[in-house]
Length: 299
Ligand SMILES: Cc1ncc(COP(=O)(O)O)c(C=O)c1O
Image (tube, rainbow, N blue to C red):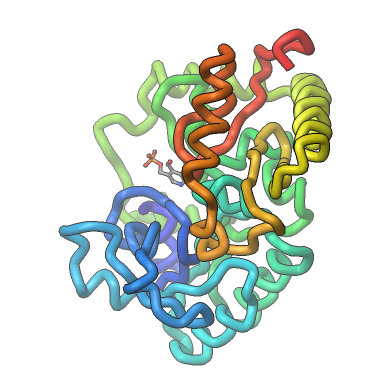
């Protein structure tokens, strides 16, 4: 919410471009086309802006344009249709609200170039990927630099903590009181202490080495089992995250994700639980996380 507001303030434009199927929180700008139904989502290259539930005002919908993940022409089309009006593109560098959907080579760099060309900001929502992909987040992992990042979840080490950051010029809009920012729980001492401890003690280069090794082992083990079983599936993996993807080919976007055999996925998940393994949170839009606390024995 704050990232979108400050992006709008930074270039004086109202529209935000997001991707179909991505989740960025519950506020009006983000709760659009999160899990739209087939009968409402429209053209795959120009998806409709579908409210993610009741209470999202129509006026908000008109300020959120939707494109398809891994589809640069759909993004270019939106910029052509809305000249000088799009303040920012917001995305998860890896879509993690649809299992695990990786950006195809060149996609993130393509977005970077489109933003630069059109004077829009590129926002990486790294609420999930930030601490879990690499020490330097998605920018380090993919080598593409956004204008702004959003962090949360793991950075609080279990306490509620969120953060966003951008260049000094953009963040100065707050210190110059051009963008209002505040809140009762902002810089809450307990949460901030937990965050500092997490960055200093847990999210260290050394620990990334440890979890990367475990993640590789887990992924290789899963891949060997999938191969042996002959299942129409693949393992998607990035950083410490991964997921068993029950599809014959790699998914590229939200609509591909909807084609999953849900019954089969449920058999997998409950079968694992019945054998004492909580492979990942329940729901086929989630993924597993290898933690710093895990050991070779857990894998
Ligand atoms: C990628 C992403 N962005 C934003 C959010 C919203 O975070 P919060 O629930 O702290 O508002 C989530 C929550 O799951 C998320 O996964």
